[in-house]
Length: 121
Image (cartoon, rainbow, N blue to C red; front, side, top):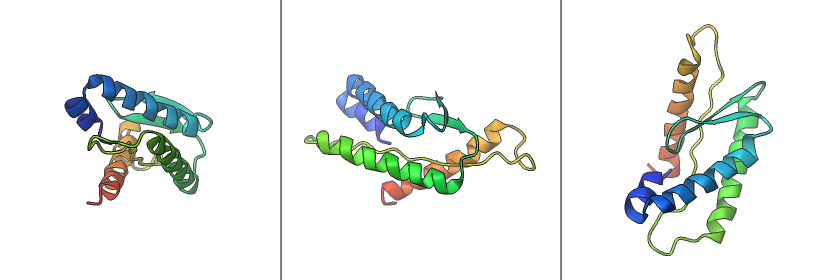
Protein backbone atom coordinates (compact mmCIF):
# COMPACT_ATOMS: atom_id res chain seq x y z
CA UNK A 1 0.00 0.00 0.00
CA UNK A 2 1.00 3.63 -0.45
CA UNK A 3 3.72 3.03 -3.07
CA UNK A 4 2.19 5.67 -5.33
CA UNK A 5 2.51 8.22 -2.52
CA UNK A 6 6.19 7.35 -2.03
CA UNK A 7 6.95 7.57 -5.76
CA UNK A 8 4.95 10.77 -6.37
CA UNK A 9 5.65 12.72 -3.17
CA UNK A 10 9.10 11.58 -2.06
CA UNK A 11 10.64 10.22 -5.25
CA UNK A 12 11.25 6.98 -7.06
CA UNK A 13 14.36 6.22 -4.99
CA UNK A 14 12.12 6.14 -1.91
CA UNK A 15 9.62 4.02 -3.83
CA UNK A 16 12.37 1.59 -4.77
CA UNK A 17 13.47 1.29 -1.13
CA UNK A 18 9.83 0.73 -0.16
CA UNK A 19 9.43 -2.10 -2.71
CA UNK A 20 12.69 -3.72 -1.61
CA UNK A 21 11.71 -3.61 2.08
CA UNK A 22 8.21 -4.92 1.34
CA UNK A 23 9.55 -7.71 -0.87
CA UNK A 24 11.93 -8.84 1.88
CA UNK A 25 9.04 -9.05 4.33
CA UNK A 26 6.95 -11.01 1.83
CA UNK A 27 9.87 -13.31 1.03
CA UNK A 28 10.67 -13.93 4.70
CA UNK A 29 7.04 -14.75 5.38
CA UNK A 30 6.03 -16.83 2.36
CA UNK A 31 9.17 -18.34 0.80
CA UNK A 32 8.77 -21.62 2.71
CA UNK A 33 5.17 -21.93 1.51
CA UNK A 34 5.40 -21.42 -2.24
CA UNK A 35 6.88 -19.47 -5.11
CA UNK A 36 6.71 -15.67 -5.04
CA UNK A 37 6.24 -13.64 -8.23
CA UNK A 38 6.31 -9.88 -8.66
CA UNK A 39 3.50 -9.30 -11.14
CA UNK A 40 3.32 -5.49 -11.14
CA UNK A 41 4.75 -2.39 -9.53
CA UNK A 42 3.82 -3.27 -5.98
CA UNK A 43 1.88 -6.44 -6.61
CA UNK A 44 3.12 -9.90 -5.76
CA UNK A 45 1.54 -13.32 -6.22
CA UNK A 46 2.43 -16.40 -4.21
CA UNK A 47 1.54 -19.78 -5.71
CA UNK A 48 1.30 -22.39 -2.96
CA UNK A 49 0.17 -25.95 -2.43
CA UNK A 50 -1.83 -27.09 0.58
CA UNK A 51 -2.16 -23.69 2.22
CA UNK A 52 -5.36 -23.33 4.20
CA UNK A 53 -7.16 -20.05 4.78
CA UNK A 54 -6.38 -20.36 8.51
CA UNK A 55 -2.65 -20.69 7.75
CA UNK A 56 -2.88 -17.71 5.38
CA UNK A 57 -4.39 -15.61 8.17
CA UNK A 58 -1.48 -16.60 10.43
CA UNK A 59 1.02 -15.63 7.72
CA UNK A 60 -0.80 -12.33 7.18
CA UNK A 61 -0.49 -11.66 10.90
CA UNK A 62 3.24 -12.44 10.61
CA UNK A 63 3.52 -9.87 7.81
CA UNK A 64 1.77 -7.27 9.96
CA UNK A 65 4.11 -8.04 12.89
CA UNK A 66 7.16 -7.65 10.65
CA UNK A 67 5.74 -4.44 9.18
CA UNK A 68 5.28 -3.02 12.67
CA UNK A 69 8.94 -3.80 13.45
CA UNK A 70 10.04 -2.22 10.16
CA UNK A 71 7.88 0.86 10.72
CA UNK A 72 9.19 1.26 14.29
CA UNK A 73 12.73 1.50 12.87
CA UNK A 74 11.65 3.97 10.19
CA UNK A 75 9.08 6.23 11.85
CA UNK A 76 7.85 8.70 9.23
CA UNK A 77 8.80 12.27 10.14
CA UNK A 78 7.57 13.97 7.01
CA UNK A 79 3.88 13.13 6.84
CA UNK A 80 4.38 9.99 4.79
CA UNK A 81 2.22 7.01 5.64
CA UNK A 82 3.87 3.97 7.22
CA UNK A 83 4.53 0.93 5.08
CA UNK A 84 1.54 -1.39 4.77
CA UNK A 85 0.88 -4.58 2.84
CA UNK A 86 -2.64 -5.75 1.98
CA UNK A 87 -2.97 -9.46 1.21
CA UNK A 88 -5.70 -11.51 -0.41
CA UNK A 89 -6.21 -15.26 -0.64
CA UNK A 90 -8.05 -17.60 -2.97
CA UNK A 91 -7.95 -21.34 -3.54
CA UNK A 92 -8.05 -22.62 -7.09
CA UNK A 93 -11.47 -24.15 -7.70
CA UNK A 94 -11.59 -26.39 -10.79
CA UNK A 95 -15.40 -26.15 -10.83
CA UNK A 96 -15.47 -22.35 -11.19
CA UNK A 97 -12.00 -21.20 -12.22
CA UNK A 98 -11.29 -21.49 -15.94
CA UNK A 99 -7.68 -20.40 -15.37
CA UNK A 100 -5.25 -19.19 -12.75
CA UNK A 101 -6.37 -15.65 -13.63
CA UNK A 102 -9.84 -16.41 -12.22
CA UNK A 103 -8.24 -17.47 -8.93
CA UNK A 104 -6.00 -14.41 -8.92
CA UNK A 105 -9.02 -12.16 -9.53
CA UNK A 106 -10.73 -13.51 -6.41
CA UNK A 107 -7.53 -13.06 -4.38
CA UNK A 108 -7.29 -9.51 -5.74
CA UNK A 109 -10.85 -8.75 -4.62
CA UNK A 110 -10.01 -9.91 -1.10
CA UNK A 111 -6.79 -7.88 -1.17
CA UNK A 112 -8.69 -4.69 -2.11
CA UNK A 113 -11.18 -5.38 0.68
CA UNK A 114 -8.26 -5.72 3.12
CA UNK A 115 -6.66 -2.54 1.75
CA UNK A 116 -9.84 -0.63 2.61
CA UNK A 117 -9.82 -2.13 6.10
CA UNK A 118 -6.20 -1.07 6.63
CA UNK A 119 -7.00 2.46 5.46
CA UNK A 120 -10.06 2.61 7.72
CA UNK A 121 -12.53 2.98 4.86
